[in-house]
Amino acid sequence: MSSKESQEQQACGCEKLLPLLEKLLEQNTTLIQQNERKDNIVLAAIEQNNELLLQYLDEEEIVKSGSNYLDSKSKTL
Image 1 (cartoon, rainbow, N blue to C red):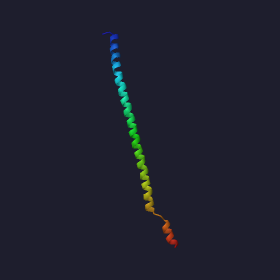
Image 2 (tube, one colour):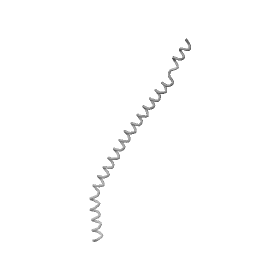
Image 3 (spheres, rainbow, N blue to C red):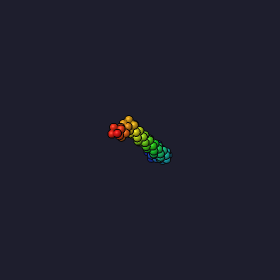
Image 4 (cartoon, rainbow, N blue to C red):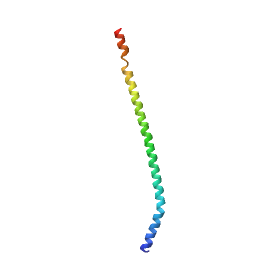
């Protein structure tokens, strides 16, 4: 087999691989995009949970400390 024939066979093999590589690249790109969307959804859920926890803690603090307004009124009467 000559060098030219070997190069032609390699070129033929590369031509057959190119569509497969393009399809693989397309699938990988799709998977990366889906993963990014999933990550954004998870991040939004975490941020929402944090906000709800902060609201809960604020409400708990108010309940624990209570209002001093009524206490101060009874002392002045």
